[in-house]
Image 1 (cartoon, rainbow, N blue to C red):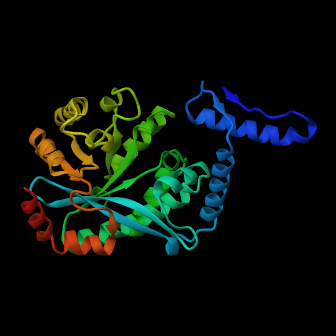
Image 2: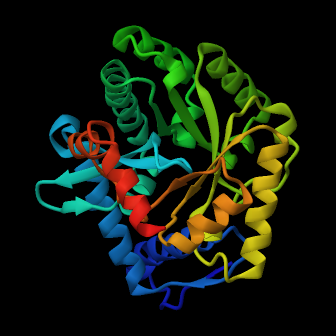
Image 3: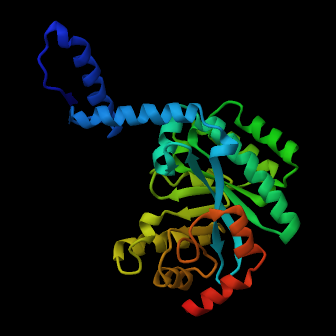
Length: 313
């Protein structure tokens, strides 16, 4: 439900309709069956979205976007993999946080073009690092909008041929939400991607799709524990119980587990005491950094990380 209090004379008719639509859309964003009264702030938000949408439409990917990488570290202090993260440096807007531009890009479907660019660059980076430093895995987030494009798998196959990357070195991260829309088709796509050699990770595990039945159907390789569950461990008993359950589930299903958002040594210690094979990702070891910095810090000089870990223990 939505509310708007405004005189309804002819002079206000168009404005009334526009403002009412804004309130309605805001109510829908909360999942429906909500009351939302129009506020002037909605006009500001709409204007900001429009400006960002126009900026995305006119963005030059190679000049404005850059891939950053955040390490995933095993119990021995080895950086065995990394997550690919996108940064947008707009010439006027400056550094635009992903949390701001990704939803707008998904709404306007620019995420399809951007996502393809990310995969292309990440595939090239993966191939180079594996040829230079030995076996190393890179994870790439796939937007549900991008995943559900009819030609998604064909585009991925084209990128494999063009970059000559080995898909066995790449993990594709999908959110649980991709299964809600056309579950059978989503399952077919995932099976096709696995047959090509990709690993599949379920990102933000436990925060989306309510049923665990898909774990019996999907050929997945990894679960990522959302940082919202990590933030308050080991002090919060409820979060400890949830994390412990996910770790045991993954162990029983022989799945890799990545815990993201780890900032404290106490968090890492709890995770590794419960499941020594867990991979740690978070500010405890590094914020996301550009490829050149990542290579110098974690691949060319891997002993630096182990020295850091020793000093923390």
